[in-house]
Image 1 (cartoon, helix red, strand yellow):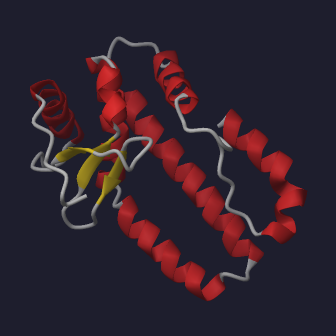
Image 2 (tube, rainbow, N blue to C red; image 1 turned 135 degrees about the vertical axis):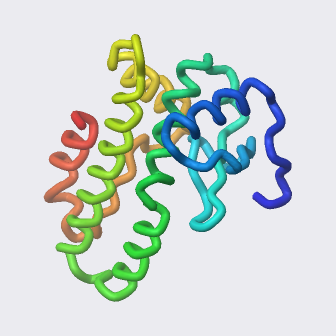
Length: 170
């Protein structure tokens, strides 16, 4: 990622700077157009940066704004630090099915919270436009299973239908 130059697209920079100001996050975070990601993501604990796939520039400014606000919610909430904490806990409790269920629930609630943050800041747009954007981005995923469920194989069969249905519903 360090080898990829920061994105200098003025339209992306303008939308990003406005979103950073609106979210109350410092706006010196670089944007990197990176082929290694299939969906937008924030990387870096102390110096976060936004990674976007090249095809994301096909979206309009309002759609970019929704995506960027969602990613900035992760930065505001220190979700990357929480991910590292989950990795440490997983290294100790890898065998514990309660950990896997709790971590899955935590990750689901974290994404819902970031979605709620973005939706609250959408002015004049029906909230359905955010849902439609998420569904259209999900359709552009590479071939393979669209939903990743992180449960141990021993209990996956028991919970798989429930987890998939609740993930889609949420």
